[in-house]
Length: 321
Image (cartoon, rainbow, N blue to C red):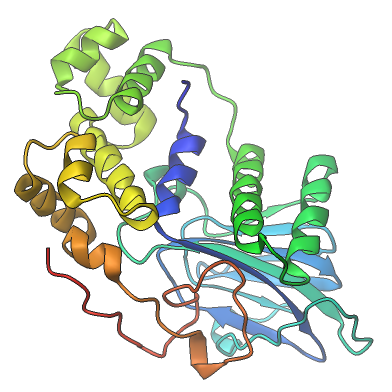
């Protein structure tokens, strides 16, 4: 299994909640999104728009372009160039299958929203906004995503989530600069993910990589953005978070699968990383859509809060384990 930074970055998002919906805007429209922990994107299907970042950068967006928000930084979208501080908080007018001749701009909004944890260092190091022109591969994918968000059908949750994953991978590929493969680091990453419960140490990983411990630690930290053992811990806990949300396995079984000798040690490490015990993380109840807008159908699951939600609806206390 070959593990790379894009696979890692997108894989780490899967402990969160994905959603996608299509909106229509008219007149002198514009809105802003506060910062959030996650990744978002906007596909401009029709019209012209301007994307504004918190750093003052503004970019023109034309039909077919995709705006990627890789680290959840504050941003906005509007019909004409406007300072971000002048844009009102987002309150989308959702559209589905039909066409409205009064709508001047149509946008697909998609995101992964992390209730706990942080986005991958690769994503945190990217610019707050990246505009990707719609090319062949992107356009084919956009057509599929547009078809899926147009109406709710059997299997919608599964297909939208898969398309959001594929969209993010495609966008990140278009951004990531080509870099030489480091076979030693790749071998260490593969080993960690093939057997996360192994008793890894810097010495064992450097042997897998065929490098001295000093050289291995330096190259690994430079390539991945964190030291080897910090990465091992994050990889184990990211896997645990996905298992907590996607399975009903006992905590003791998950602890063993991700490399902890006891449920207590696992729970303590998980709480340090995610801020809550694993049982509470598993049973947290998503909050309502933002601003009390009950007409906003988020499409894939029920997100804890969409970017822009200032309602402050608390999650369920869940379990304390």
